[in-house]
Length: 403
Ligand SMILES: *[C@@H]1O[C@H](CO)[C@@H](O)[C@H](O)[C@H]1NC(C)=O
Ligand SMILES: *[C@@H]1O[C@H](CO)[C@@H](O)[C@H](O)[C@H]1NC(C)=O
Ligand SMILES: *[C@@H]1O[C@H](CO)[C@@H](O)[C@H](O)[C@H]1NC(C)=O
Ligand SMILES: *[C@@H]1O[C@H](CO)[C@@H](O)[C@H](O)[C@H]1NC(C)=O
Ligand SMILES: *[C@@H]1O[C@H](CO)[C@@H](O)[C@H](O)[C@H]1NC(C)=O
Image 1 (spheres, rainbow, N blue to C red):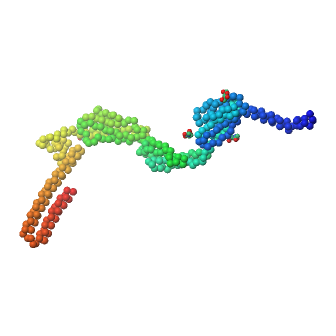
Image 2: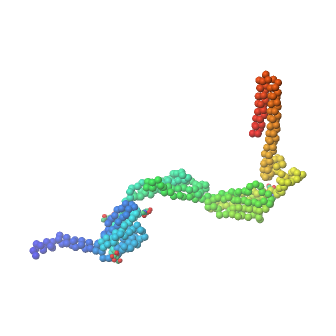
Image 3: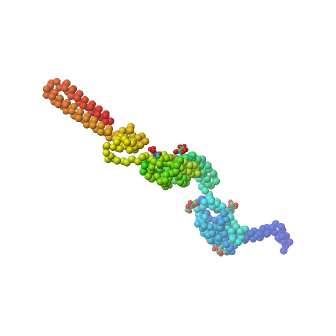
């Protein structure tokens, strides 16, 4: 060997280059997996590929950005049908991900199970066509409620919120409000979410009294109408300064007392409460004396032995009625129209008879006039007209009276 060549072989630059070459080839041998970055449109399908070198049949593992294993050597590990393994050869492992969303972004890991240190990452980037944020509106009874709108821009997505503050009363309980989202991508459609207002309030209590008056022997039934949110679980019936009568029964919100007697006179209370307060209503019970209703009572009976026991109330003058006895007064009032109608009818008949007499008298006089004074018909004619006018006046007066 020539000394020149030997010195060239042993020269430092060449030996360094040789070393690098040997190291490079070693490194290529050891790098058994390679991955490629991918960019895809939202909703599209991404292909994630892992290239294999010198594959010796060991297990290939593919993981998602959260490092959950998607495929374990060709076998699906994660239950997400959007991932499919489409290829597994000695050189290439390929999976697809359909209907990609922005949440799928990140690094997908390709690795040999035995060698975690040599995994490769394929970065998936999802591009989204820049869109406008959604518009949110609060509605109640088809009218918009103005709210405070805030919007956050996350680059590819927006977060929009609309907050309303509405003063409520108990009447708003159960009212429906809805939040509507509209977006150009939805067209004329809207996404609507309904909410029902749950307004809590203290109870209200109202006793529904029985109609008419109560007499001894009648049954009393008082209904206690209760509201409140939460609705009071039960109502309490009591009697002011006294105990409830023996025959009193409470079923739910109803108090019943059978066969009333005057000893039951008193003030009855209905009370209810919830966490927000309590409420009460009272009813003053007055039991009237028992009246035996005898429509065929003999006319010889004394007209007013006692105001409440008087026979046919319609015959008793209004002034003499017991003002506390509404039943009797009502009956008398209903009798008044009959008397008026009777009087009007009599007057009507009388008026008709009068008109008839006048008309007949006039026609008789007219005939006589024509027979005796044929020449001076003008004056007579005037008289006849006057008579008819009078007749009309009578009729007019009758009409006015009727009205
Ligand atoms: C892939 O993407 C990652 C992250 O964006 C980047 O660090 C890496 O260099 C990319 N690799 C290739 C081969 O482009
Ligand atoms: C992994 O899958 C490949 C391709 O189907 C196969 O050739 C290889 O033997 C498998 N390895 C193991 C350890 O099962
Ligand atoms: C795609 O994903 C969206 C949201 O995850 C879903 O609503 C839609 O039904 C999916 N489409 C298909 C074809 O799977
Ligand atoms: C209950 O008794 C008190 C005291 O005796 C009295 O002031 C009040 O008027 C009574 N209430 C009724 C409804 O009787
Ligand atoms: C009960 O009330 C009625 C009607 O006010 C009255 O006539 C009667 O005297 C009262 N009875 C008692 C025992 O208070």
